[in-house]
Length: 457
Image 1 (spheres, one colour):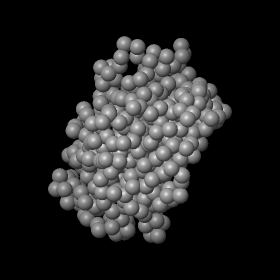
Image 2 (image 1 turned 135 degrees about the vertical axis):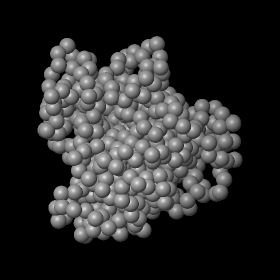
Image 3 (image 1 turned 90 degrees about the horizontal axis):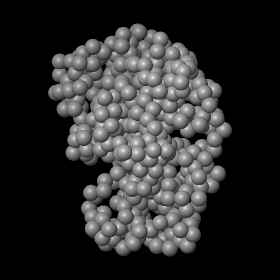
Image 4 (image 1 turned 90 degrees about the vertical axis):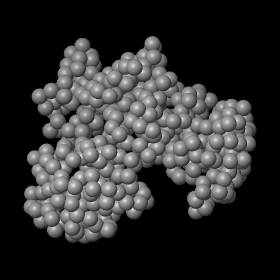
């Protein structure tokens, strides 16, 4: 039996994982009278949900039999579809979807005509999603922004919403069978989450799912500087492929957006029209030039005027933990890029300081990354490398000889060591190339502890 949104709230939902999205899903469904079985192996999670009507919180070691009896399961993104607790339900053909899918289906039920704008990629998707949301708000659309960024999907529901702007991770894209975004963007691809996917092709195939339900009346936004993205999309696209807009920081693309002579150019119409100069952007770095182009392309396709796009780009300061300037101490600048959880992100961050030798703080929990890609940029960009976390020893072996390497047992000690090593005019950059879960709650916690340590220098 496939449970769909309906006016008569019948059937039982299984919620697997009680993180942000799982808790929001339980609350959303309970408010509408559905029966809910919510499971998480952590007995500390879900305590705030125990008083909700028709909600059962399960912390048993294996809820497989109970989940098999559900009509539909909403899966949290941190839990893979191959988790043992799901296998009996999948074998019994219980649909396993997620909160983004249910938000989309709920809009269909309520006959809400809101458009869905979906953004994915290895790096930059939080910045682009935030920018697009701000641009559409400035253009006076009732806009709800979230997903993998910030608010969970089902906490965004509003019967007045005109645009849902959603950041989608590869984990979320695994469980979206019917989700149909009118605008979908793939920003870039580099190796990531290879502890969950077989290889880069497997990871890329999951990212491409963002386009699978689009039609010729929809819009796809692609990065013209990423040959992997372009080639994969061309192979993936169906016969009724949507209108494609390409953005590029390196080349002129008629029909797209690009940078020429230091200006962002909108050439989606018959004429090339400057938007603003790169110097007017509040966010800095070549990677952020690409993010600005991507956001502009998406927002313009969604109906925002040029004025709203330009004003947002002039004023948006960037997100915390993404190349966030902290302060200058004794002539040394400190930047927090805790969100740099993969090698590709670190490469982008290092490229933002091409003329300087940095002190780089890196390390954490490895995602089966290929750290050899850091060898050349470390030789040219990094004077000192300070390693922390579980991956420190492995990284030190791979990167031996690239630069001077030291180890630190905590973030606080890493910051103090960086202060000792850095010379006036240099930059200390936290850009870990790893996840944070060995030493911290999440990348935000890691960045906050770095910021605190810097502010105490």
